[in-house]
Amino acid sequence: MPIDKTAQPLTPEQRIKELEAQLKESQQKVQLFEAVIDALRRDYGVRVVKKPSGKPCKSDSSRD
Image (cartoon, rainbow, N blue to C red; front, side):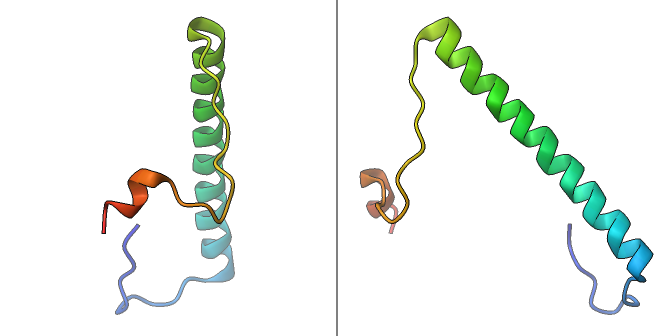
C-alpha cells in the first residue's frame, strides 16, 4: 500500500483499522501457504523445510 506523504496523518482508530486489515491478510496468506505445503506433503510426498537463517541459498549468490 503506497503512502502519500501529503495526506493527513491517520487517527489512532484509522491506524488500528489499517493494521487489522494487514493482519487479516497476513493470516490468510499463512493459511494458504500451510495448505499448499500440506498438499505437497500429502499428494506428492515432497518434504518442505525452512531454510536455516544466516545461510544463503546457493542460487541467491548468483543473483548479484
